[in-house]
Amino acid sequence: MKFYLLLLFSSLSASLGQVLFKLSKANLKSFSLYAGFILYGISSLFWVYSLKFLPLSKVYPFTFLTYALVLIFSYLIFNERLSLINFLGVLLIVVGVFLTFLQ
Image (cartoon, rainbow, N blue to C red; front, top):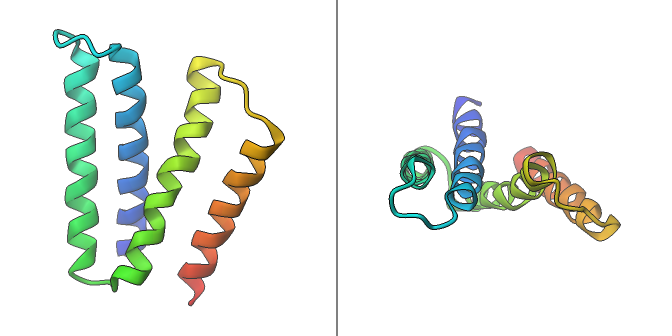
């Protein structure tokens, strides 16, 4: 169970890294850019560490949570509009990852 929480944290940190990349506006002097790199690196380390204990078929679906979380953060932080299709896509991703978890 703790490795699934680690994977969830991996997806969350990758998503926050993406948000920080957007906030940095690709400015090489921006703190947000480097913080995003750090979060993205931490995310990768947790993901690879999880592979040591879980099969790839269980680990890989958690990467799709990153897409769902980025959409949610885009809405909350950047006030980007989410369509019904976006919402349904997020719902399908979450259900799919949950079903993989049950397997």
